[in-house]
Length: 291
Image (tube, rainbow, N blue to C red; front, side, top):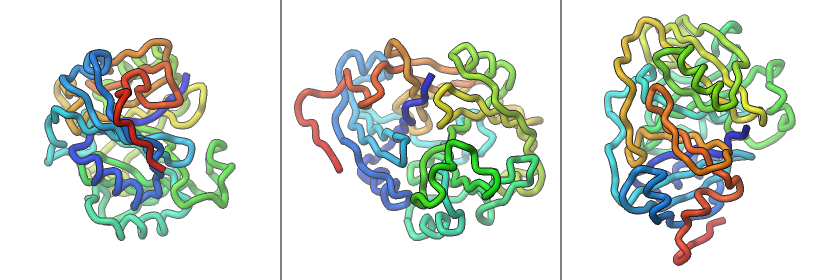
């Protein structure tokens, strides 16, 4: 099973695309309109969308601006909220990557006061969480030199922003979510309990204790992580529509195009095609290619 790409809903395709190019060096792969009955049924929306596909290393990020916009990202969101979902950008040098980010306007910090170095029991990584101009949470992730996972060891002298390591989602019931994703073909690869002052500064929360469960796919990278914050009442599952800004989609390779929603309301898509985003739904006219 493969994780093909990440899909974000945006209120302003041009602005968000420029941010990802300027901040992380993403490249434009193509820009097109997506529409039709199959697209509307899959997404549960009326009307089509403008789609921009970006590349970062071997990974793909899709930005969708729907013709019928939904709700903005909640302004009072916290890292422990059930609709929290980020993807982690692997960087070769945290100081340089953070310095580049500070030169680009529009983002806001989650981590305070800056990048945090987590203790060994929490992975021993350096990390920084923040939000893009639409409010989507992201993470910069730098591995310790002697602890670089095999998937990233092939780029010791590669670009500053190397690719996407994982997507992390907040869940209310760890075992329930593990069972759901195992049924899709993922498997538990690692578990840890992250806590302490470094985690508090990373998440912007008071004394968090978070069970982190890494779920592996057959392809290795990117993978999925579950974040289950202890002692926090998160209430019922979220109810997001695909045109809501907070509705981040993880897109897996599958035999049939279909949408799924996990026990906490996170959106998933299964797609046959791995070469092009929503290829079956691309409008036959007015398709423009970027470079």
